Image (tube, one colour):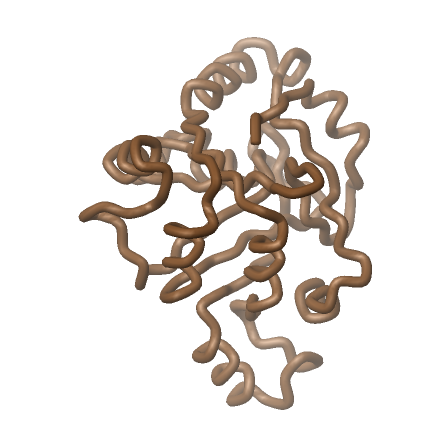
Length: 211
């Protein structure tokens, strides 16, 4: 899936300003998610087309974000240690939704679980975590909208890394270019990946995921 871009000023005017939303770039079959890694892991991924190599661990939680600017905030525009390279990873929507369906919240929610023991058993049984955090604008300021990030480990992480990835694009040069533009001229000409609200109406995982 080729990454499409648009002006940030056009995007921010179009997207919802509040609420919980999965926002990303997708077509009828695929969605792009972003991951930040240190150079050695990113180099392996870009060369081989999957996540692996001697420095990559399937037992450690790996986090992905469908929202570009949320990734920019978390990685400091590819400036934080071990997050110096940004990968745009394309996977099929059916696999993305499989991940969503297995997600367990990282914090206990009394309206979803009978008690904390039930929640802890759900966490132990699943290799997927979900967090909703304040989204951020290009300058790193929090907004009133919530952004999703998904963590994976174990068998689901291995399946994602080795079987579900269809394309990996190292977009670090684009990230550097746009951070330079942002610092020099603000948001006026800032380019970001073209994103929209991901459709979830009627999906079986919606009630738990957005709770």
